[in-house]
Length: 348
Ligand code: CP3
Image 1 (tube, helix red, strand yellow):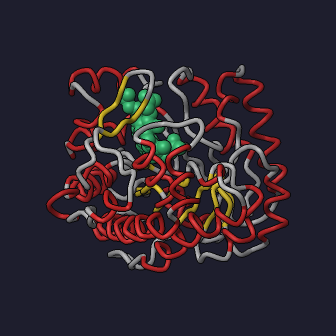
Image 2 (cartoon, rainbow, N blue to C red; image 1 turned 90 degrees about the vertical axis):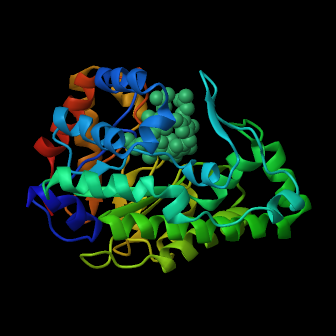
């Protein structure tokens, strides 16, 4: 049972103990990651080399009793494949040499060729599945169209969303054209991961929460819904899908109508309240504050217990953080959290 409790929970089927995985469970807080990244020379080399991506994916599974592996990659592989020139500036994050600002810029873009431009991603999926050998399920992922568009139009991280929001208000038809292109690209990209063996997929809508309710529905949610509708069955049948809108707590009812199997919650909402609102339409994933990992292990254990108790005796809970593990975290604290989830689980 332990090897597929994650997939059972995502389908709201009974499990022995609550499954747990963590967003950004591979990354800079692990010394073995930092070492490999230094050897590889850059983060993008890790993503684009299937052997290295496979090794990084497996690193956290060797240390912690995790119930899911997540493909090591990035949401920005799609705009990179569209020719925007992705690079990372230390302490600033991702940037593009060629941001997309005008309707004419948008007209020049096309759906990348999954085999020629992004084939390293399904190649990594196949390799990881072979290495996991059925012991742990593999989660594939992509960014939401709105979140990808935010990076592509801003050209990098933003606090004001000046360019993307000006485009949204001034040229909504052009932005819809870009979002439609991204929705078709993301669906093809997730289907390539599923065909290669990804057993669940998550859509990261990191910036959906900066929109008004009406604009969230029009510019983010509808495109995620189109992607969910376009997902194809994999070698073992239909795969569960997880929608994660950071800051999306106010819109869970609408998110639950998309056809997604599960909703990812950030930590600004109580999971019992979320469950009351979505009922048995979807499973829920979350929702510890990522900063909990800065606390002492006994405090981490108490807080894990509280979230499990709030969710209660129901099927359909996957434990996770409300956002990714940060580079400053002590790996021993991650172990404390993962072990506490299994120890205090209330089987449904
Ligand atoms: O969860 C996992 O373990 C899988 C790996 C993963 C990464 N990025 C690895 C990564 C996943 C799922 C992502 C998704 C991603 N990438 C998102 C959505 C999730 C979120 O965090 O909201 C976003 C917005 C991005 C874009 C991106 N890529 C950012 C903002 C950064 C951080 C830049 C920085 O310097 O902190 C990246 C780079 C990145 N992606 C790193 C990792 C491990 C750090 C790269 C490094 O310096 O080694």
